[in-house]
Image (tube, rainbow, N blue to C red; front, top):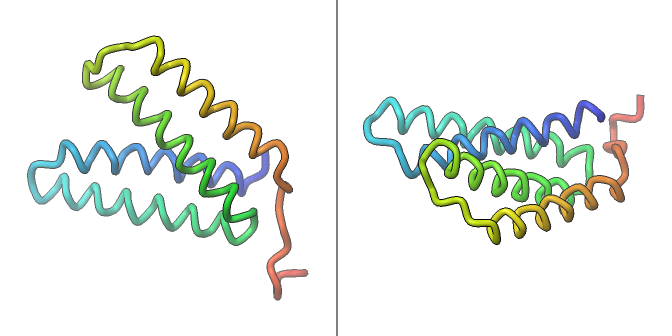
Length: 114
């Protein structure tokens, strides 16, 4: 896996953190941490989108963020485990993996041909 795709996965991890933070922040420190996670998440996604197809990066970013958020809710916040939710998440993951497989690995940015 290329370094750029790894960046997308890290961005999705930070997306899960800030989504959880939006629901569970209760003081200045937790809100600042949430804001930092938002910044890091979008910064990494934008950096990856400069090298990969934007639509694919966004779809993978959101798909992994959704999966991570649902799994975190089930594991850490005692959300009920529903088999139909897991089945739908698996379909989402199949789509995300499919997009990654069919997209070019990296594109050259104008002025970065060296």
